[in-house]
Amino acid sequence: MNDKRIFVTGGASGLGKAIALRFAREGFKVCIGDVNDERGSEAEAELKAIAPDAFYLFCDVTKIKHLESVRTELEERWGGVDVVVNNAGVGGTAGAIEDISLADWQWVLDVNLMGVVRGCKTFTPLFKQQGNGHFVNVASAAGLLSAPMMSSYNVTKAGVVSLSETLVSELCQDNITTSVVCPAFFQTNLTESMRSHIGGLHSKVNKMMSRSKITAEDVADSIYQAYEHKEFFVVTHPFERRLWYVKRFSPKGFNMLMQRQAKKLFRK
Image (cartoon, rainbow, N blue to C red; front, side, top):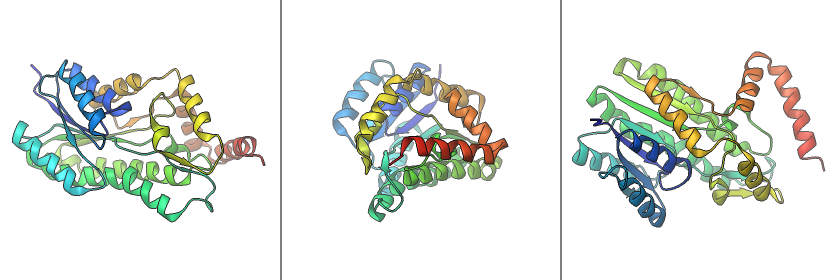
């Protein structure tokens, strides 16, 4: 009988819900946090069909008091938690660096980067008290490859990668492990929270997501396998994984590829 426990931010839809369902099928007790109560209730009902103890809590990751409240609830209900998935995020603002307002920068930083920081800060003391725990921090291939016209989003996801790399070394002596997830496009509701200064970008992104052969369920399965084997990097898409290897071993060649692609995509 599996008595493991998981908490997933942004768990009411998209990748977050797919992760919650994947772990529920493995016998985990599941709690999802989200800012959309309607979707949260629907996801809770779906989860309960698999994991009767599953439940939803309203949780805004830009408010540390919400995460602290979740931690308290999990301690009272379950006596703790084994896996914390910092998944909640927004699509950021697409556009040239000079066009993106500082308010938009602050918005995406507060959710995508600081939301993960708050999650790790809140649950690390509990993991240390328990003597174990595992963080899953959802970044993006954007944090590895830094495509043009997505500066604010790229920076937040690169920050999540760097934070996760830091925690691997910092928390290893406490038996706390970390995985960082870097998927590329797959079908999800990301564009609902995407702002853009580029005409027609939402439809282009939706088209690229719909064409992807990799699903949210595939990414969730990769995350579960990484948890099982305590793997750090989860780079789910083969093409982007190859690009990442090129960047690591031939930075000049990678820069030339990206500049050529930028000229093709954003030619005036």
